[in-house]
Length: 516
RNA sequence: GGCGGCGUAGCUCAGCUGGUUAGAGCAGCGGAAUCAUAAUCCGCGGGUCGUCGGUUCGAGUCCGACCGCCGCUACCA
Image 1: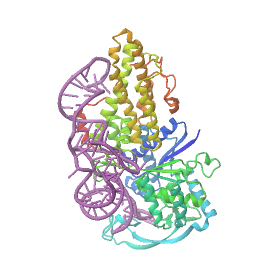
Image 2 (image 1 turned 180 degrees about the vertical axis):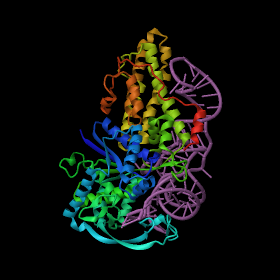
Image 3 (image 1 turned 90 degrees about the horizontal axis):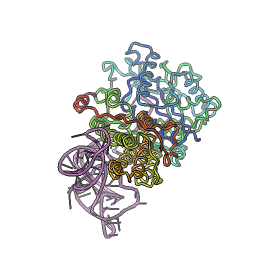
Image 4 (image 1 turned 90 degrees about the vertical axis):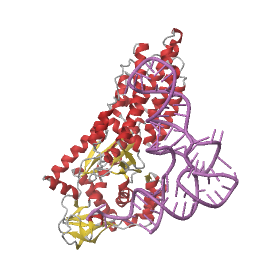
């Protein structure tokens, strides 16, 4: 049973999660659930990044200590991920002792192995005495800090610890080009390769005057720079440097957003190379959720609240929509209209209706017991199902989650056509057609069962509900992908179907649409 | 500025290494059916495949230019 260690980016603790965070967690969870279905020993890590300077500010604004603040944020995030059905096996927070221990250990290992890769140098930048921070880029407008436009920015020098990132350029180029360290999708790999080709600068990895952090080993004046600290979380969760951390490490897949590709595909592997620790096998950088075609922004009032999006049809429906419509590669657009359309067409009318009519007919015509198919399932629906299973696996293996979701609904649509083709209600009126009716009902029940299993990575709770309607002796989680082709549900007592995906009234939806 | 991507039916998008009359889903219109959440199924789309050139027997599919969007451009101290 191969292990599969999958991680998501840890989230900054400076504000509530939104749809963008949700896409990443749900996508990673979908992959994790799919790998479990394929029989891997999955270890799925999520967590929180709690050391950034913005945390200190947010806490101060709220009038609480940083620790109280991050505890609060961690609870909030964890609550949302629970509502969305995330099946993570571990939850790491960078304020935890186990993380600090690993950060320290990794730095010490670099100090021992490659002492030349760590050095002290001066950083010189523009310092705002109002913020007590260095400023750069968009934070400077007209030569002044945007927070304190009445104050002069003063040039200031600071001594920092640096990592000799430049030494790893060639090594990284080779590793990425060869695929040994896979950066995906291709557009992100190309970006990283071009960055590498243009050369690397050394980076500073420590800060002074920022006590909310992990002490830099051997220099009590400094703390570890938050990015350097945060990246290590993936390793911390394995128990490094304790013996046995290799049971999980290296990570098989880091799921991240496209905005932090550089950190994960250049800095992180360089850190590991310096420390002599194995590199993760693969990084997948997904795109962003846009709102009405534009970047989501809280200040512009265009950030859809996760609460509202979950409240509309429940967490499962939101998962499905994000993965089917936004996808996990390029940017995608969220609108209430598209959400409503997908929910209605795919979940309610196609899948929900198929489950409803199939189980209802088993009840009406066979007293609720799935009959036996005496033809050996030699039907067009079976042929379509076999093709569907192959296409589903191919899509999921390539992390084209939207295509995987499409395959699930397509199989349900094919089953709906099968119902029309065979017209069970006509067969039921002719006693000589009893065998044919058995075949149709058995095929439909088996298809519904398969759909429950295939849908579980996308909407686990509803899939579980469908599965339970079928009266199977074993739990859904016990079914492996290999068993799906020959899945046998004959003789099972099915429950009369409830409405799985109720369609809300249109006037209510219109009212909700105005609320972001 | 540099590098890269995108621009295909009202909407969301498929179209791999160039080759029959350019496809799917949704929406819309017409019809059938009644097992089912008034759900389902069937039929109907003639879109200059952003624009203009070029290569080729033949180009959404390759090359060039242009127009319009977008991404990355390095320690956001």
